[in-house]
Image (tube, rainbow, N blue to C red; front, side):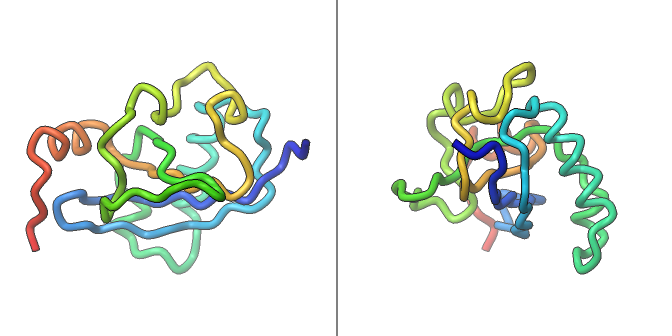
Length: 125
């Protein structure tokens, strides 16, 4: 099994406004820790050309699995609000043990915004 994968990270700025941008990362080591991967993505986003400044400067702090290759997709437009205990990545674990595999799509967001939206899942437009 390869330790490198192609992952898509969906940068979520607003759940209510459905404001997100996907970023494709190639050659991601699945044996690295979640906190190391989060630090890598934050650095990559801050220095990536082509992303609008609001996405580069946003205070992302949590990742959640949105979709895995050959699996069912959610009907939610931004990401599913269910199975948080299983799908939110926990610090201290490596990506592979969290269920990350090649072509997994992850949401990267601010937990406080997610909890607020989950309590009242209404979109503005």
